[in-house]
Image (tube, rainbow, N blue to C red; front, top):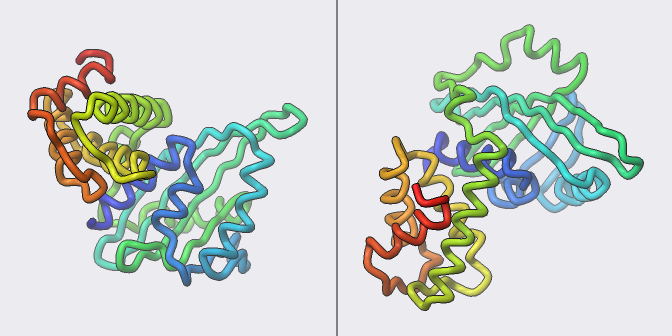
Length: 228
């Protein structure tokens, strides 16, 4: 998976309200995190353990990545994420932050998070313009789109499994759904999306058997997505 595809998938998970899933999939075992240039965590286990209670207290979280750029040659990703959540007292909290990530072999090995004045200084210095590829907001999966697509894909997969049209490895249906989201987001139009979803399903290493014909697979996705 190339950097652009991996980052698009990561943002899809983040925008879909699955920040820990994104972390689990893409953060390196020996990766490090820094917050406003101060050490936050070292190693995947420690970094996750520190984030879990924060996310648990936040309740329902809405993420919106508004800007993202990639420096493919140096494997660097930078994006701005605006987070909204309701705390235990029912108060609405909004957080605005910038992430700078160094990638290696498909994983994040170093991540810097900037907020507040530190973020403002970094933006003024041009941190969001470091990349050679700019993923415009229109190309990033918005929260509603990512969430709705994932729900529809899961419904289609459940229906296909129940009808014994496909067999998916135990416990892997969510992984297959995430693979299909990446494929669907690369489509040029609804018809192309159905084709991309079908091919990604057949090619997934988590799908053990496919018994249904191509048209049956595409019909299942079409029904789940509202018949388009």
